[in-house]
Image (cartoon, rainbow, N blue to C red; front, side, top):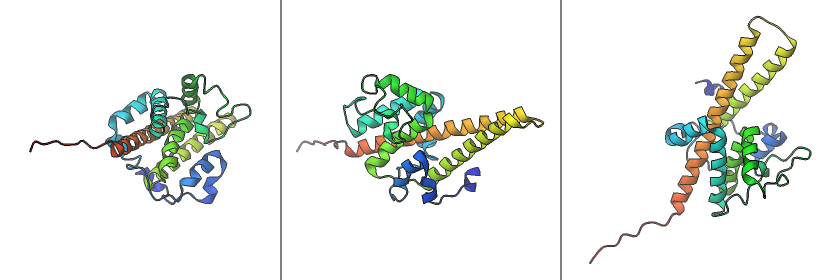
Length: 215
């Protein structure tokens, strides 16, 4: 019910600032969306959702590999780059220049461990780019809810370094716990959503069975 507190308005120009906002900007006006929303993903893709929830890093790596080979069958990890280059780099850490071609699996593992949010988003964006998929109302609400809680957790943790109040430690831990839990759930929803889309697209492209009958 708390999701109803967040707007479903499309991403505005002010929301497209920074690397993360700019990456989602191109999809703001796309009418077609994923076949299921992130809120529907836990029910539609239960196994994938649970697996992503409890084995996040492995599931995120598996889904990136699956998405890359969906777009370019049989390519393995050949097309892998850190976050697929969607969010740029930082100083000497630049996508495509961190041994991805020689050690793709270790690099992908480091990506999912160090930047799980960006890793999940990058996999989703691969399909958004391919099929020009936009953001539906549920996706917008979940992402905004997650970002709001993450920002709140950051602010509270910073304040706790300079201010003391009764129950400070418990309050900070509670907010951090809720923020982490929501992040894990949203990441699992996005991973399950991507898996469903890949399965749907591949089923549409699969050759139909030919029924033969005797005359």
